[in-house]
Length: 478
Image (tube, rainbow, N blue to C red; front, side, top):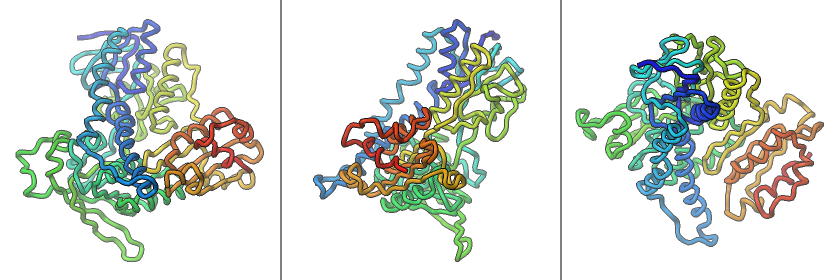
């Protein structure tokens, strides 16, 4: 079967669906394809369901901090109940998402999209020819090439566990591992993180990361630095090989709580040299980075150039090698961070350029990044290392805010802020935050940097008091 469209979109996440709908509103004939449930990573198996679990973990943490300071009894997470609550946010999305697209007059397809020529893709026998094609396939866990890699769970599996196994081992020291580790630890699991380097959470301020690592260890998370995973072995006698469910089913159903694994890792110790670390656990979760999800769509057939970082795009989000093709989000090699707001920004740019010609470029200034650990870790703008190279032109204000009223009133033991200010323009160049309020506070700095506000303008604002925002005037001084 062959059909022709003005636009064919591959991927139904935040980047793909928005462009499809916007072009359809301009009476384009639009088709959209996904090999998985409609809705994309963020809504179904990423940011949104994760934040539901984080919310419960935050309540546990906040209650524990206040024991003896007005509260008497602690609370516990009931994992099956929490997961049932999470499902109320995700289960309806695929159907509702597809219905919305269909109601708009968009042709929906399920299956694996593969280029067969510069303007045509095949979807399980359906040939879809597009005047334009948008690739918005996101990212997937990076291959680790270790023995027993087939036993690795990933973020999808963790967010669908019916029971929480213990111990849990998270491979990689990025935000996925740390966020899930904090959730699992507050839910009562024994938790380990393996990270191959000295500093985890690359991209965040090292001093604040060090504070978060210390706090993580205080709540019982075992963080093994300079440690590389070597192998995963499923132990005999727990689940018979011929009776196991496979893939995601095995890792999310009750068998995940019965199966046991032995991981072996190489731990580098400066004084004692290399040592082998062995851990027996109930689940090993991949948190060691993601790669563009483009390797199975036959880009070569579409004459779409790509590399390790994704589809090669120009400043208009257009393929550098096939002008019919645009791409947005985590599947591109654009300078944008692999975050949902950046995918949405690139989608808006691609939409504009598809409809009106290449006249708009993404503005990547002020890209806020947040790790939803407990406390939260946030970053935006210039790093301290970058600022130091500018000499006297900048002031770096570093505060231990744990004694400030905002955090002391809930007995928050770990809270820091580092604000980088241009002394000549009096504008904010960067902000790095560690606290329970870091996510919302980061948004104030995003506004200031994006709109070129000075510290004087920020301090002129009358903020409600006492609120976290009312602390801004103390942070913005030269």
